[in-house]
Length: 266
Image (cartoon, rainbow, N blue to C red; front, side):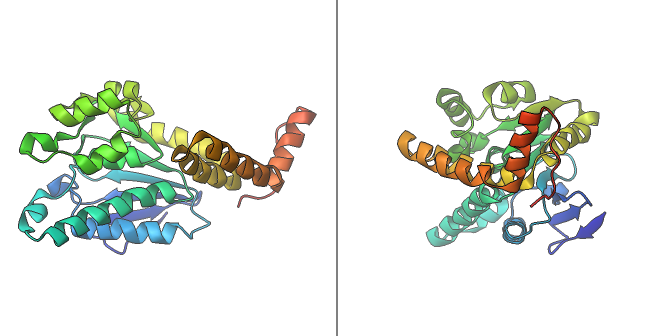
């Protein structure tokens, strides 16, 4: 396994031979709060991964006792100029949308707490697996700061009334409730969390990378358009997909009633 990091103090990167990339938020003493440095490190990795054809799946996780406790409130409090504060939230939004725009599926591996912008981070990943004892909240309202930006991602994952309840009350929900509401995909015993994530990763790696990339890109683009435009985009994408060698082999294998043999992964 290869280890690399441009920001070893705040973000660790590991890559294995399968093309699985782990990005570990590494501010355990601050429950991995999203400092300026951590946001910058995440953005740098997103920019790199955007053009990395060898990376197949990205996993975001946290070091220490928590996944992510949101923004670093000490850094936020130190800002007084409106332009500085707005720039910080813009940087965070760029990271969140960057994860959605990566060609690789992104999985949040959640333990401990995921609060405020940490909950936003979970919602911004394509998939999420959480330990049974993990807890989620958009709790800024408890401190007079309504979680407006986390609400953007949350409301695109959770039904509106349930999202609004979380935003208005700041109350925690457990992993089972988060799964029921659609914020996460799977729940695992704490000691089996990594194994459950790997099951999901293995299932994705079994599929042709080209189809996965095409599908992820289309999924988000169509979701933000009207129904007619969504079908037009989907039809264009499926046409390109069907003409790809991997799909040609897959369809022929279905007709022949055999397992497909992928000649290439791209």
